[in-house]
Image (cartoon, rainbow, N blue to C red; front, side):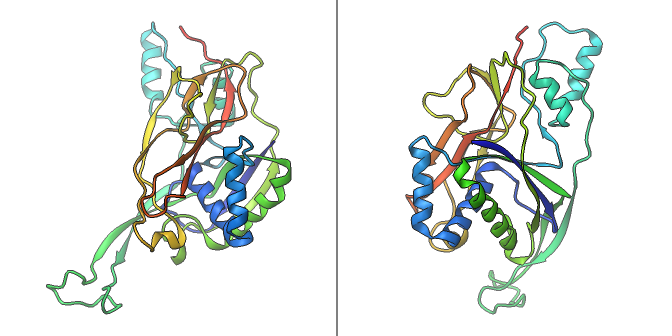
Length: 302
């Protein structure tokens, strides 16, 4: 597998976080629409056979990367304590800051201004009349509500791709750019163009790495390492495309390690994590992407 970096130029606001499982899910739908369901099933089967053809990171603003979750010093001076406290608010790093941290250094971090957010007013449509009109006592009447939206210039996604799947991956991103990403894509949200899709030289990790930091949210497999430093999130996923309107669109809540989580291991494997099954009551065959995108790093415990 080779490393690639995809840069997306956003051409509209978006509402759905650029998380690896959601990106991968969109690519799976693009694969199904382009090549058919049989090809999608063959693609999914490779993961269960230990031959993952495509690994996806979360999407990050510009060239920023997630801050590794690492242990703090047991003994600190007053100035170190103040700096540590201020740095806790910083969750995204420049490439240099990230490189310094994966090499066991403690760089001075700077806050970044990352995009903007706004709220727009939407009007709910009466499900009977197909308009915003309705009686005042009618629960189906349309009403105004706030809809949050976010704005960024570019999103960077890192990939590990099997040699025989590179051209297909490029095609899937191109196809995805025609349909959009995430919530309300059918009315213009989550629109983008693929600015670049290039081979990536890799991260400047140390040769004596004893751990990894994940660039994606993930769910550990049974034999994955357990000692490390991590943060968690609870994912309340929803089904996509026609699955979202036929039956129950909601998946069961899923606890995931979030991007930036670090675990001890050596040597570092190509990937960790797994596909998660059994999250949809309506569609038992649905799986959720839960693979880690590991970058080797060195953790020095004090």
